[in-house]
Image (cartoon, rainbow over all chains, first blue to last red; front, side, top):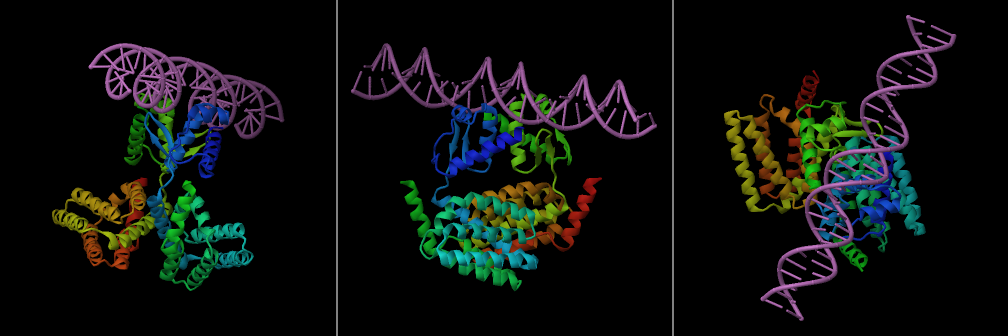
Length: 218
Length: 218
DNA sequence: CCAGTACTTCTTGTATACAAAACTATTGAC
DNA sequence: GTCAATAGTTTTGTATACAAGAAGTACTGG
């Protein structure tokens, strides 16, 4: 029963941090949250510890747990690492990907294209996620897949914002094609480069991200 | 006082897992460890949770915490990710490394060379670690540095074994030179490739690792 | 003699109570 | 009037007590 409860609470707390109920710097009041969730402080503290380990909150001894949203610099750094992790997935996947996985990628891309045509951001977002998950899986390295998924999840709220900018979906879509082509050709270097470019926050994507951060702060 | 105690216990527990006091599959008995550390179960459970998050133990609900040493496959996978992370550090460091950091790398290499000449494994190990930490830092990406350091720490016990094989120190040393040369030339691709090769477990290194795992199992 | 079930015991998970530290507010002094 | 110090309150950290589930054992039936 323990893991279950602490896990559920951790998940819900995570959600509360992501959806903005708690802003950067807010203190997570143990007693308040405990009675809100209808549990005692013990499982709630365990949940908070988990959030701390995943970096969402900072634990200051004898002071409490404070929500710690990444600032611009940290965010850029995280996207840079995400780009390198995805590049690594691509490099390995180019050697190891199966025909069925390739077919699944092409399928996801078809649905992505349809979403672009319809201007359907939500569907695009979902299929895009599926696309990347398949790439992670196709690296043939379960540990890498796990690490990539972890960071992907962490960056979720910030990635979503990016898609709202004009023309981003179409560009992203074109990059997906390049990635699939490289993977199909078993070209490790090309696949790695394509994925790195696709994920990296550079040029106008950088300015878009900064702009969205500024908006979120208000 | 809390973080302090739980942190200390987590560290000591980690040590106990690393130095073989606990083997793969052993259950971490809360009450036994609690009285051994002279604390109650509460802080000890928090420490165990941390180990679980870092992957050293597996938490099975209502069953307890079990030491989870990586098997051969998982180990290979982790080294593969380490190689990619270090390659990423190299790629970025080639563009961002400072002259003082380059000098520090050369200094570490000098001490490494001396250790090779003396056949001093311990000193080599220490300087080798310093070398890699400088590379991480020189990536100019604090998040990447943190992630690389985390995995590096996790693989520590397995890396150490590797150095004991004949000729490994000399070969590793030569690779260090190649890395520094690439970084000094600001050649991102060369630096990435050199670091990837240096860390990757391939060829005879693979067989060495398998052999050492077999030894450890007995 | 073996297998299945019930019971006992041990262990985990959760709540609560207690201690220590930090923050706050109030009072007094300069 | 402002600053500082102290007392009180709030909150974290830890211990302990209690509840529930799992595992092992013993007993009974086939």
